[in-house]
Image (cartoon, rainbow, N blue to C red; front, side, top):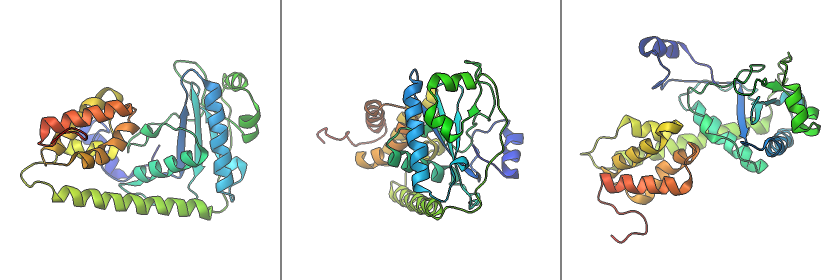
Length: 282
């Protein structure tokens, strides 16, 4: 989803993995991923609503300048051009997630908010999905709005070349939304750092805890990582309300259901510190 500098290449060469990379990234497209397993019609309705809302909000964009793809499986990818070309940043991916979630909320649709980690691979246009054999096929807006899900599947049996559009000028509302998301992300980061610095001096904040708060976790490790992060915060005497505030968003973004998020945080706090979970007697 992103571009990187030479520090990424160095990290990959030294470690053989993208894991743990904490440098800058950037992109000129903001991607939103709509997945509805087993119900492509529902995904299609959501993609239509999202594309329409983006074009309604960002009126300087032509309809061809919003990229829409059938993913080749169970959903759609909607790409919004960042025509002012925002500079690389260590928090770029978090700003992208914040703005993507805002756009999805305005459209009243659900996106996969767990894709916005710093080193997320993203299926390339016209690549073939290994499970379905269908291609990630670009759809013109008229095709998105008027073709059925079955017709879109038929189109995607073959790849199709296309010219990459690019806006003549940046949409001022889009740029304003981006700058607002940047400011909010910086403000929340500073607040988290302030809170962390105020907690117990005898405990050690694990890097994995910070990584979970910033990046969430992969599906097969997310429950354990959430428990461990809560236990680590408990070692600082972190109040339950603050632990939930710090961890819940990332945990929900990873795909854990709300009840499981609450349970893992409360169990972790009991493991690591003196505070009972919310609602329990002290």
